[in-house]
Length: 385
Image 1 (cartoon, one colour):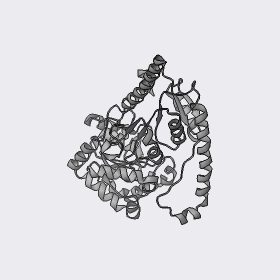
Image 2 (cartoon, one colour):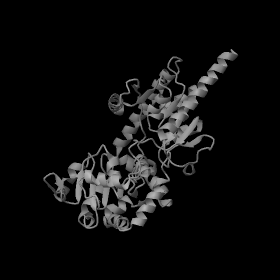
Image 3 (cartoon, one colour):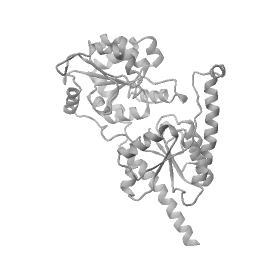
Image 4 (spheres, rainbow, N blue to C red):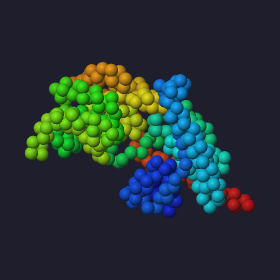
């Protein structure tokens, strides 16, 4: 949005979201001085599909079935809301940008009926259900990964990358040392950073807890346990020793960090889930990564992401269930990188190839180009009239 306003300061932008995220979006808009952004609520629902669920399993979890039924009616309401807002000439937009979440489905379907051009964006290597349904009639399709990983028409698709914070860029050796010292670690010692995302990943946390004594023999460790999982991991604080404000042990655990670029910048090796945004951040920083994809998510999108990076020798992959059954699998992968600087450098170099600079500007350019064509067509139509 900032990129659009930078090029078109008078552009009118609306952000539609469902009730769940409404307050957060409005708060972010306020905190980032985006008072011109109009945030509106739209009804939407999602189809809960679990890869490990059979028909019988769904019957045993009837609450899931009931929530899917309830969300079906929310989708219908979202269709009606979208139609009411978009068919009126005074509110009809020149272009709609759809990120691919379930909120986008009713808006995209109505846009198709009303012939309003829309642009979709895929972050993962596997398009979600919403984007698969909307892609055929999209004016343009933006992707987070190189186009060879998608089956989209070449005349529509553009590799734009995924917009991330500008702070995520390769850290020089001196900057990496400074980050390590700022976090309390020795600047000249290797550092492993482990994160399961802002909420945390139970299996990753448990595996680290089991192998931590062995890890500390070969590297310093920083664990971001996550907001939801942090209370479960407090026993690990016994490994975190401070004296007079200085970290005297090689271990530190955080609940969450709003400055992940510092943590990633300090790291020599990172253990992470395979979410698209996190992997984009790590590729932009050119890090040696061990991915532990969450295989339970719909569409296996993290597993597919991980396979994509592994095929290009851009990261190591450890299976979540395999690691949960035997934490030594994770230890073996970490040890293989900690003890091999050349291997770390090669992985980082290969991962860096997935980084696409200026992703936000790339997306803004596409959206504005589509909007400009709509304006030009309307002017030509008026002239002929």
